[in-house]
Length: 209
Image (cartoon, rainbow, N blue to C red; front, side):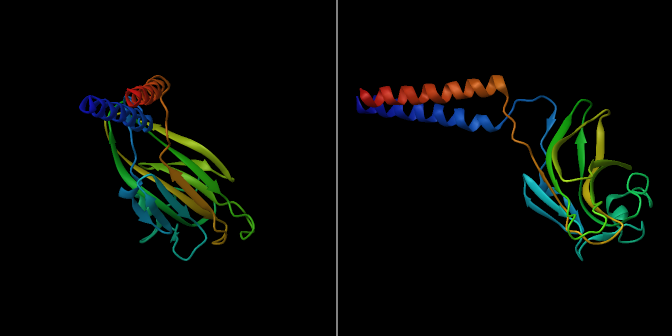
C-alpha cells in the first residue's frame, strides 16, 4: 500500500512540475530565441544575462560615430555615414551585435525599454536603433517601451545590431534595456495549467488513501 501511494505521489508531483515547467516555453514554429550573453559589446553596454542586455549613451566608454577606425560604424560593420540619414548630428554611441542564422519565415523578437535622459542633455535627442546588415532602423526616439520583431525573408545569416546614439552632444545617460520576452501560448499553456491542477488533485487524493 505504501509503495503504491509513494509511486502515486511521485507520478503526481512529476506531472505537476512538468505542467509548470512547460509554461515558460511556447511551441512556436520558426521562432529563434536570442541569447544576449553571446553578443559582442561595443562601447558602454553590459550583457546582464542570457535574457537581458543594457546599452548606454553619455559616458566615457561610448564609441565615436565618425566612421573611422574604432568607431561605432566599424564595430557594427556599417559604412561611414550610415547613421546620418535617420539621425543627423550623431556623435557617440554604444551597441551590441551578433550574427543570427535563420531560414525563410524564421523570426526573433525582443522587448525594449528606452529611457531618454533629457535632464543632462541640452538636445534631449538621444535615440535607440537596430541594424540589420547595412540597414539602420529607428527603434525609439523618446522614452518608451515596445517590442521588435524581425522575420527572415531569405535563408542565411544576418548581422544584428542594437544600440543607442548621442545626438548633438556627448551628454545625457540614456539607457536601452533589451530582453527576451516571456510568451504564453494559449492552447499549450492552458493544457499545462490543467495538467498542473490535475496533478495537485491526484496528489491530494493519493495522500487521503
